[in-house]
Amino acid sequence: MPENYYIRYLPLVLHLVAALLIALPVLVLTTLIGRRKKFAQKMQAYECGITPTGDTRGRFSVKFYLVGMLFILFDVEAVFLYPWAIILKELKMFGFWEMLVYIGVVLVGFFYIVKKGAIDWGETARVSVENV
Amino acid sequence: MTPNEISYSHILPEVVLSVFGMLIMLAEPMLGERASRKPLGYLAFFGTLAAGAATLYQAQYPGFAFWHMVHVDAFSTFFHLLVIGVAAVVILSSLDYVEEETVHAGEYYGLVLLGAVGMCLMSSAVELVLIFVALEISSIATYVLTGIRRKNAAGAESALKYFLLGSFATAFFLFGVAMMYGATGSTDIPNIALTLAKGSIPGLVYVGMALMFVGLGFKIASAPFHVWTPDVYEGAPAPIVGFMSTAPKAAVFAVMLRIILQTGAPGWLYLIWGSAALSMTLGNLGALLQTNVKRMLAYSSIAQAGYILVAFTAAPQEATSAVMFYMLCYAAMNVGAFAVITFYSGKDERRVHLEDFAGLGATNPLLALTLTIFLLSLIGIPLTGGFLAKFYVFQVALKANMVWLTIIGVLNSAVAAYYYLRLVVAMYMKPAPEGAVRVAAPLPMKIALLAAAALTLYLGIVPTGVLSYTTEAAAQLLTAPAVKVVTGQ
Image (cartoon, rainbow over all chains, first blue to last red; front, side):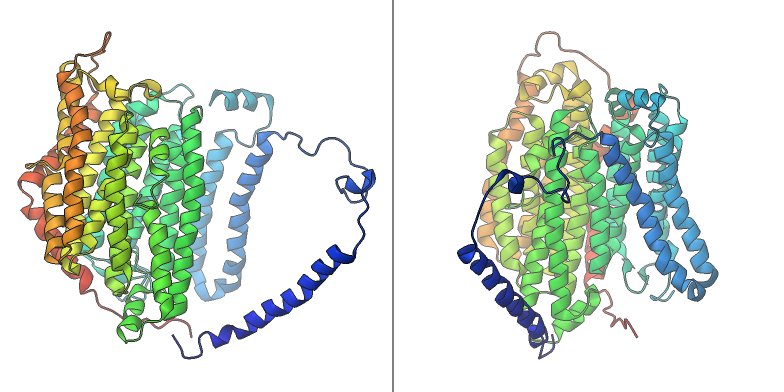
């Protein structure tokens, strides 16, 4: 651990102090000075200025969550592809084969979810999902 | 073979296990809707055999690889074989369980193998971030396996509890790694050891060690991080409890040995002392009150983790050897005990209460006999592995002048005898309830049970071979070449 170890974090502390100095008075002053008026429109849920319709706690089909989860599979794959593409020239053919193996592994997962009917929203899928 | 190189032979068992895990994922949807899932189980079992062979091959090429991230030595080979052996026995004992319960067989077997990948990697990783990645691979697999009986409310409850608390604990570990990096400027265990050996120890090292201990203590279910254990073990499928109470624990103990002993970091002795004493006491007292056998064994596993922690207080080489030997005995007897429960509990795990085991000695002699061997070993009766393991642990602790800890341990062993023996008494001295069924265990289950029982007895009667191996592995672990790694430009 170098001598000036904690000193190096001084800017961070100063930043924190400055943030508090600005934010705290604003919060305190508005609660002390500000007037509070409550009326029906003000207490409504804020939906970008449009009059809200229906209940906020509506029910979603579990499939939305499933799709959201499966999206990560491909999202992460794409995220790994970007840095790989940048250093591919340095990695040469080794990098190419490694990425093929990686994509192959991802495709195994894709094959599995397709075969299991996880992204099939049709009538047949509903039956098989209920079976499991 | 230079350390700064990609060397697949150094991660061969992990590669083999991953490939088989993926093969199972490919094969499962190809099987018909109503077809038996046993072929997947046999494929998984074959995968563990191949991984075991890969480990033996790998053991011939010890040393660093992947820029000092992986180190293959006798120590890592031992834990690889332990984890893979546990996985093999668990797979054999789940073949019929998976047929009966409503679980996705492909995910079940695949996750056992992929979880084993993480556990194997934990025992050979010597870099804190890689250890963290391996820990996560193993943890996420076990979270899913815990809740794999989707139609079961207790299973869902235990999976949620395990996942939330487990992720929280992993964050502690990661935070500890960050502190350690801040204090020493490296995440490589050899490098940290070099920095710490230079002299003045910054305060951050203590914080880092404590935080890492919280994360790892959760995974081995040592007090005061044990509260999740009974609920999770009760709700998880019985064969999976056998798996997750042994294999990940063995891997985490390997990590603890590497982090604590290889870095030579200070300040952990009091943590371990307190945690060991608490785990033994709370685990055994809690187990006394249980009538559900799975919950009882959950508390017993907390206590067993405490006994293993006692070994850490000894001199480094003896401590390592004692932990390795104890872990092997514990894995054999605990996996065996849960294999018995897996088979006997039946569909939806109906028979898991103490009274359900009444008269088992008459109705199912093989099950009763093997379960008795495992329970006697858990108590620590001579001629079983559990006795020698406990004896060895307390002996090395006494040598290091840990008198009070040893006294607490021995007193606890006496308390523990009560609840283990209660189960034995129920099996042999109580009449079987009306309509008790006599079902012969299928062949794979018999093989699994007899293998675990044979290992338990073998370790108790002729331990010299294993003990000399663990001593040698401990010596290798502690004299591992500390290499200054040049990282960055």
